[in-house]
Length: 238
Length: 63
Image (tube, rainbow over all chains, first blue to last red; front, side):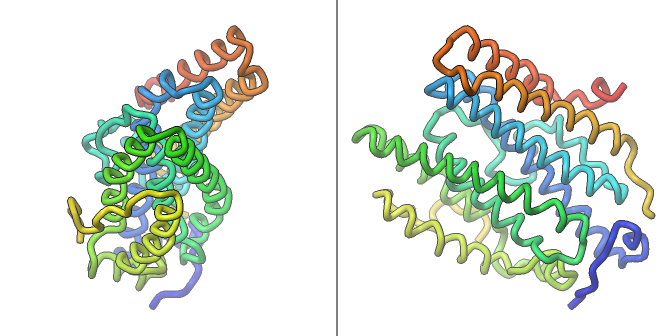
């Protein structure tokens, strides 16, 4: 296991595999950060239920763009240009959950509640990682992601409490996003994931992180009266 | 030090300014959500900024 702490100035001396993995994970992270606004800004900025919600949609997008900026800077400083993801069509996003378009308020709420939570898990993988410039930008990003998760959760609960139709809409949205959230952790037994762990760029295996996520989110779903979807139905990456 | 990717600093500066402008527009609207004229203007400003970012024309931004 590699445990040294690396600064940008040391990057050129690193093993090619380390360089490749770091560049790859930064590119995917950048794509996910900007992929969120590309999913919901177009339809949700004009269609959010209140003026306050419209402004919060804009503020959330501003924060995600800033997360992209910070990741792009860390990547750019080691010669990895991630700017192409700014104009990447949604269907070409690296992660399935970011392909498509959010067109309903319930999807927007549950996206924040479930998918931004996976985002938090992905960022937590870099805690205490071997690449210090990445580690340094995490606290501020994670704090903002926590705000997005809380907002998504509150809006989901609001919807459920609005009556029978709201509850059914929330359940449908959870059914859609839950399996996508589980897929975001990647395949069980992934060899690439092992190499990330070897180089100290991730902490958990895909399956450990996925299980931790389910242990956290399932009790929350039960508490708010949502039936936990079948964790295997419709999954693409087992 | 490794060689930075082209335009790393320029893109960083541009996006910093964009994020600042967006937060500024949101802050203009937040205390006035019950005043249609003010809040509509703030939302329109947010939309204009976001439309530009969503279009992703990086070359245009930086040159």
